[in-house]
Amino acid sequence: MYLPLVTKTRLLEGTLVGVAMAVLAGVGWWAIVALTKTPFAFGALVVGIVVGQAVLIGARKGGPGPALVAGLACLTSLAVAEYFIQRSLSIESLGADLPLWQGFSTAFDVVRSSLQAEPMTGAFWAVAVLAAAVNAISPARRPIL
Image (cartoon, one colour):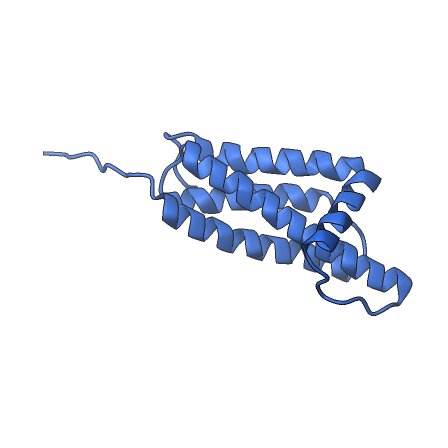
């Protein structure tokens, strides 16, 4: 007799795997921009896709919970990476030694200023967050790996 394999959504595992991938993807995006000294907005899309897939892998199947986790992890990763990208580009262009961290209000101001100066970056972020959420929303969807 064949019994179908019933897989429950494992939201905690999806969160852990998604956050880990969000950190790795954000660091990767920042490293590429820091090494090439060229803003790379398409990196946001890559972050969104891999974070959504990672949440789906950890959660074992999609749903609204994994989609929310994927979207939030992606957005957080993009914001933190953007702060460090702008910091690296400022160090390069100004030749100044900037502190690593000056608090959340400074980081928020840096990211907000960056998005206001380059509105297309915000558009790429929106598509990336959407890609992460769509990647992890369908209950019938299974991970690629």
